[in-house]
Length: 391
Image 1: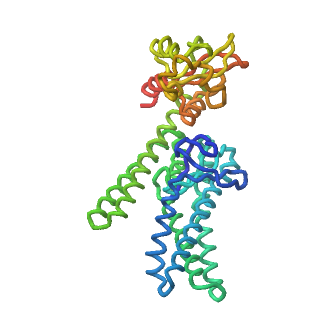
Image 2: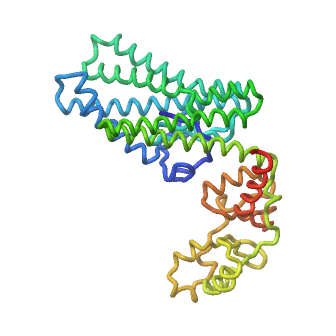
Image 3: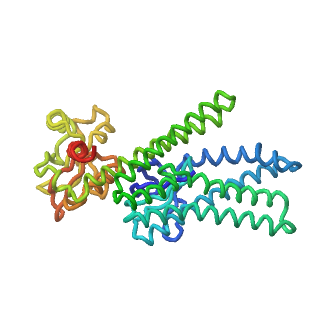
């Protein structure tokens, strides 16, 4: 299964929607990442191919050959998913949509978009490109299976046939009109063109996607009662993932619309509480944290901001060392993860907070402290805006 998702870029071992992940390689300028959860899928798929599918349909091979067939089938699917997502990314790039890369995880792959498509046509073509790529891959694998019958070994031909059919199955599943699957995105593009509203189109497509997720969960329960617990649990997990992804996608569209055109200058506190780098951690706790209840404070020296200190950093120091340890010793330096400019868009600021895990950011203007941006203040604005305009 695959999904496109709007998300923020993560580094080699980064967070975002996936938690820790690893950069494998780059292709056509797109970084390919591996979420550790994909290893679970890889192991399960290799085992099911080597001990189930291949022995059932292709008899007479030694166990070692079946295991090599299972591994080859898994690696082939791995490359097929990358090809599927790469075609999404290439078409998106053509329409000027910022792409953050490709991530493989337990439910397949994600072509990570930095923004929504600019129009319905771009959405339609980008969404269609993935299933088209899978159909092409399926035809190529099946064609190679037929063309090389006299030249390749029987196990190799079996793997080619499996990869051909699994790619066609991948294309068919993704064309289901359940957002955020490709078929759901194609449906959204048609509704977007017809209704002229991305928000309403996303609401309809997301509703269908949520219902489809619930249907998969019900089918999973039915499979469990019929004596197939592993398959049933798998369908329940996929259904739950689809339901949550559909709902989150609609929520993200609402947030982007609510914050459209807003700069963080509107939300930031222009006279933030700062702490000197020379005070002890005990003085920081007693004089600032217990008094103001913030999770992060800018650290200053002679009027210049040096960095910031958080409650998490304080907790990392044994309490008996607080009287002798200075704030400047453990504070974090200024970095792109904890600073932002006042003319930055509010949606971009939320993405930075999500990626870094920081609920407060230092606002710098001309390398001087201009204020503090708080997630709490932004969420209060969002709540009011959404309740007033997007019911």
